[in-house]
Image (cartoon, rainbow, N blue to C red; front, side, top):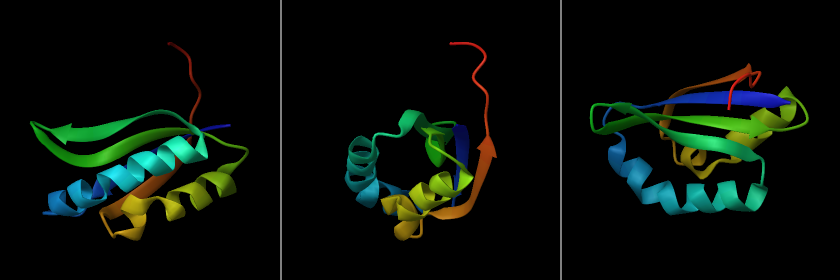
Length: 89
C-alpha cells in the first residue's frame, strides 16, 4: 500500500531539520519502505517533507512516521498520512 506522508515544518525550525538530516536519511535507508522522498520548498527554503511509503497498511505508515528522527526531534508542525495511488511514473 502506498501512503503519502506530508509533513509541514514548524516555523523557524530549519536548524532542527539540518541537525537531524543525516539520522533521517539513515532511517530511510535502513527501513527500506520509502519509494520517493524530498523536501517541500518555499522558494529556496525547506518547509516540510513529502515521503511516499510502501507499507502494509496505514498503521505501519503511522509507526514509521512516529519513529522518523525528524518527528522525534519535534521538527513537524503537522503530519498527514494519505493513501496514494501511483498512476504515472
